[in-house]
Image 1: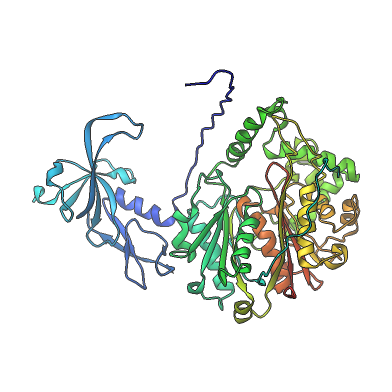
Image 2: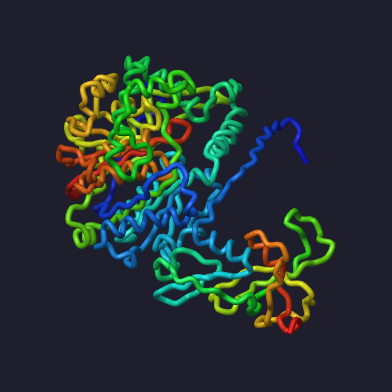
Length: 151
Length: 423
């Protein structure tokens, strides 16, 4: 509630930025377009980063060994979301998971579909479902679902 | 300067039992206008790798703490350590982020100085960067100026923002330029002469952005006007770049470096705004009391009583063509009003009696967040005799570095020396 007699001045600024992704992420995005997931391996500690990056944060080493990882992996953590980013209730709650792909030492986020919350547990095997028309973006992986369903 | 009733100028900081601190390593990226091939973290990493490659005796794993600076809002990156921690040998180390507008780079360096002088750490990395091609500098400036102006507007009358700020920061600086020309008698030729001197210097510095060995006074005067008296040729470029420096305690400085550059005086000062488009302008934009006071305190700490005689080299924040002359006077290197004459006589040339901005200065390279740190870095390189092709002919015993920012009224000063402070 506005208090009487106190003037406010509105100042609206709309920022717009264009972030360069760098050579490493560029190759990662190109890989996604071709249906491949690229990671990179540290020459010192052997850690495989997905998405790839230039420097190993543990060893302060430049990394150059590109490794293709699988589009399937295990669930590390998950949540069910009920409210949108704009704070509106969602029509249907959405499941999101933190997934470590086979061959990677890091995890990525992804939407989970065709799964019920009671099915979810840490360690569950999941596989990526790719979009039919890909454009070299993280959204080229449409969602993750149970690995055994397809088998 | 006119003091208010009861107002007084404070003496130097008491200092207490501060330890000696030295610069033992400097690294930079080559500054360019658009580095689309790297992301922000990779750009910063380039400067840090450059440092450890140029000064291989410094072990990255022994770095104990990191100070990190970038402009607020320019690229919208407010927690640079989230992006860059692992890219700068900074993972799992004590971390301090600093942002003070145009002087960010120097304040970041001061943060590293305090870390060591206080006895907390012995080996500290200071890093600053700006990647203006990823962000929107004018919007970033507006982001800083508009909220400040809006708040101030509630205390004073509006004089119209748009009219005063044409051409972004150049619009604001034009009032300072015109005022300085009035005070000193500097002409359009002097403004151009300064640009020619520094961009020719930049041609000898591989890290600089605008490197123009054949630039002439006519070339500068023939560029279009932005806000009288400032033309396109009178303003700094917008650069992408990063700078890294390693500071060490006396013991480690001697262990890792044959000829370190000692930090012997640090100070910053702010006064009331000299450019306030939405409220009253309190002070003369060319008077720069903040610069005079910061310099006075830094010289006192350094034990320098006559900067005219004792300072051998200066790097000043010449974002606009009148500023090198103006700052050199306000820093006490020349008498007031003598800037143009000294420039004419070649005193400030690379082989002059008091070389200024042998690196090419800000008029040649301006990755804003790191620009004020580059001033200190270049002074350190001159003392360490590591400046390469732009090493000045005279021996540099004492040097002064100057950073400028805020709403035209915030100044940082660092004094460096070839020998440590005597305790």
